[in-house]
Length: 141
Image 1 (spheres, rainbow, N blue to C red):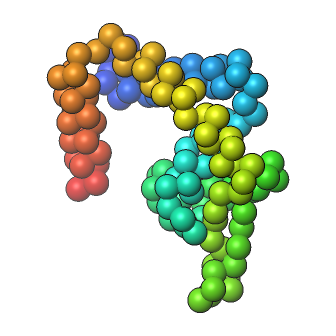
Image 2: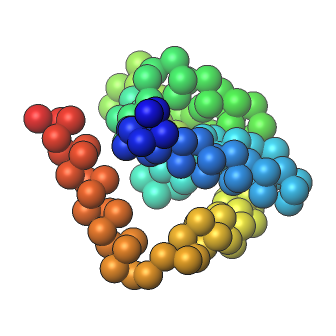
């Protein structure tokens, strides 16, 4: 019964993607999680982004984002700076070490994505995008 539940299938697939991705990263000697990669990538794509904005983009709660940001900072991949217009606000940016890691990871991440989608036709990928977007929109309303 549970195996026929669409939400269960979505969750199972998401977990399998993360598990596969983590194994690939580990086999390439990369010491961050897939979730940390997502945070790093959002920071890389949004210069001087706040921690709150990262959480909103990834739909993660404040404690989870805070923990991942602190881990990435401790590893030297990101830099926290006080915002110029508000010293209470912290802006995140990528360090030189983080840029090097990102450049190393991009081809690996592409391999992970390709592996999961390799047997799908283009129209199937488009349909999945459309369906997942509709589900998110239904939940937002």
